[in-house]
Length: 119
Image 1: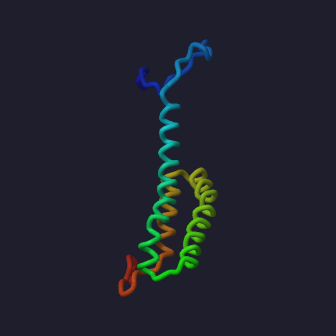
Image 2: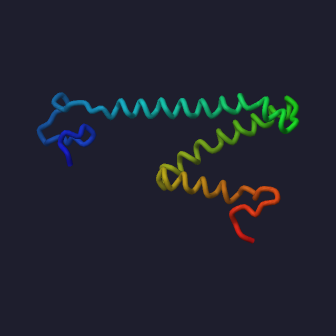
C-alpha cells in the first residue's frame, strides 16, 4: 500500500484527531452526490421534453399523457426504496445486473421478431 495515498491513511495508536490530515475523499463524495442528483433530475426532465413527440407519435390526449407521466412518476418512486435495498443487500453491480435481467426478461419480444429467446 502506498503511504502517500490519501484514501488509505492509517491512524497509529498515538494519533489524535488533530494530528490526522483530512483526505480528499469528502470532496469526491460531494462530487458523486451532486452528479447523481443531476442525473436523476435530467431523467425526469427528459420525460417532459419528450411529451410533444410522444403525444404526436401515439396520438394521446393531454389527459392520457397525464396518465403516462403519473405511471412514470409512480414507478420511479416505487422502485427507489427496493432498488436501494437490493443494492445494499447484494451489491451495486449485482443489483444492476438483477434489475437489467428482470426488465429484459419481462419485456415482450418486438412485433414480428423473435426477441433474444429462441422458440
